[in-house]
Length: 171
Image (cartoon, rainbow, N blue to C red; front, side, top):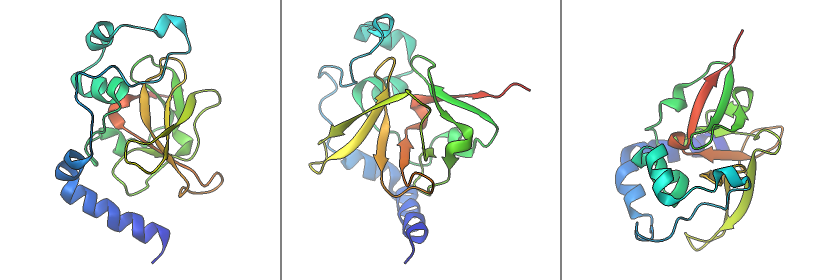
């Protein structure tokens, strides 16, 4: 079975089992300290209360608590215009629309971030280590990087749609 076929099968399973499957992921209690990476720009080192005022509950859960949205729930999966995908927390441009591809997983996916846009760190929440990435400016959690993406990088930056906003290119 080809890599694309496997992704399609996994994507269909996630679509059918999305909410129950995500509910099984072992998250820590909501009252724990914010899990997002430290903001690299002091202006974005906001308190939890300030982040809650700025963000929707879903965006707060992902960006500041490293939650995961349900697969196939983001309207950004269907976004195909030219433009930039920016951090929903601080509006830093993270990905060009030219690097977006359909991974079949149910989350917006990109083969490369913009230069100096994200920081990568190890995540051991599911026991096996994964590479998670955060917005370089505000530290907001975006998603995870996998080694099964398309050329030229072979990477798949699997992003939570609620952690992004789309800014269309101006003509």
